[in-house]
Length: 407
Ligand code: 01S
Ligand code: CA
Ligand code: ZN
Ligand code: ZN
Image (tube, rainbow, N blue to C red; front, side, top):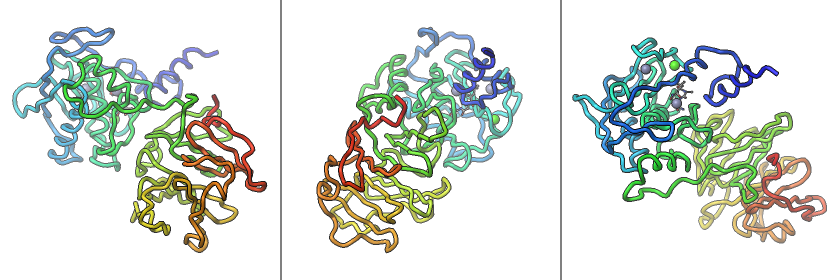
């Protein structure tokens, strides 16, 4: 076995690089991630941390792709992510020297960590310390943006500021310190449970707890695991939970967790239900709204209100949706009722809602999710799922909800 290559691949995976097993410049750069001398700081396990709770920062230059006011705003919000959960405060200086100097740099820029042009390495930060310690450099050749079109400055700044505070990379895909770029909508951004724990372990909790700590990144083999939604996408089954999803494809042997936004930037977290229509459009439901996505892009005019399907005003959200492609119909579940939607007529069938217990004998309500897969309907409720035979109209098996996730 080629263990050096394997080790390299493992490391490349960890750093979010292409798993080539070759010692590429990017991999080398990843191995010598900025570290440096200290003072004004103390060691903390294997890392160092700032002694002071007030850490000033200064933005010394700007990105050519953003207005200075947009850069300032993204930077300020990224610091706020960390000050919301700790006693740390980050005042901005516009002239004097600051603890943390933030700049946009090109290629070789007087530290040993040359930037690589557009793509690849996006930024780096030095761990706490005097001089260059705590400083953050963004690769000026990236197209930094405030939205999802290029590289979102806020998202990368949160990660770099984590390093500037002394945090290392994390293996938790929900962590801000996960070493791969992921777009996040500003108002939906969340640190992971581990991020909050790690930074509070170093710097203490905030006096007034602004928010409750975020939920832990779900574990696919937790017997208590439940889902927000389950759908099929061609041959795949996709399971949704919080900000995350798992994709189970018959030809992929490993099922890994990913952020929903790593595939669909427009789709929110904590969805209620989802299905793929016969026209290869995916519909995602959350609260009273739904989004339509085609080829990874959100369609114009969405989100729309679920009343477009013919729901009365009293229906504020749906629990689950089941699309039956062969029958050109879709069944919506709300509480203990179900609604039948005719995909051909594009309207709700007459006589609905009906009690779910009458239409689908033996199925527990309220439901979390429902999906048709290889001749059976699978209904998810809490940590269980019910395998339902639609021909003989009864539940044939009860299983753990996560039984598809190779546990
Ligand atoms: N900086 O903190 C990084 O992790 C670098 C790679 C180091 C080897 C310097 C970087 O730019 N990584 C890419 C990245 O997306 C993959 N980082 C920012 C992020 O938001 N995770
Ligand atoms: Ca780059
Ligand atoms: Zn640098
Ligand atoms: Zn990093």
